[in-house]
Length: 103
Image (cartoon, rainbow, N blue to C red):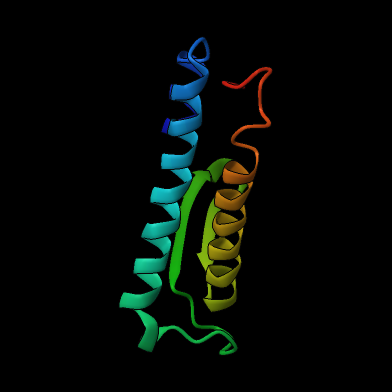
C-alpha cells in the first residue's frame, strides 16, 4: 500500500516509480518467505482446521457483520506464488513500461 502511494506521488519520475514498485514487491516476498521458513514445522498444507493466522473482529455488531481473515498452509503457498509472479512481472516490464509509469 505504501509503495503504491509513493509511486502515485512520484509519478513524474518514472525511474523512482519502477524502483519503488520493485522494492515493495521484493520486501513483501522476502517477508513471506522468511515467515514460511521460520514457521515451517508448524505449517501444514493439507491439515484442515489449522489456521496460521486467524483474525476475527466485529465490524458492525448491530447488523451481525464482522471482519474475518484466516490463512492456512495452502493460502500461504498461494500468497508466496503471487508475490513471486508480481516480482517477475515488475522485472519483465522494466524497460517496456513507458507510459503511465506511476499508475
